[in-house]
Image 1: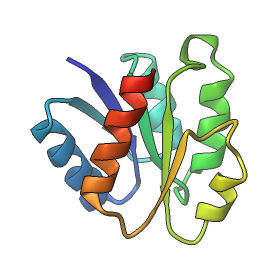
Image 2: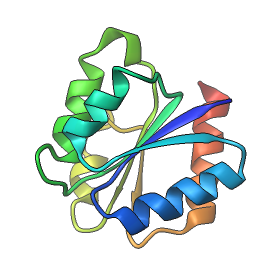
Image 3: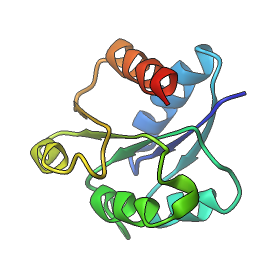
Image 4: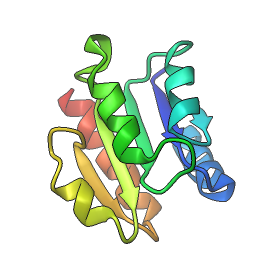
Length: 120
């Protein structure tokens, strides 16, 4: 089963993403901030990562930078879901494979996940 890591400090958003992705047949691991996301990467190698931008302990930009520094995860697609900071993510195609707005459209997220996993 294909595993997706969802990193978001808003539990409701993480749950909505998890339920929707699990309904599509994916296995989902969640983390409430970038540091916990990195810890999760010690236990699981996801096929794709979805992260928020604004989080405590380590924001999405710092998290994506740390992920890209790991050679074993260099090719793993990262989707940034953000509100006001989306423009920062759009300026960093070296870190993020896609940037989607908050509030999000779950169908658009699932379509982007499928597109990125199919092209990986």
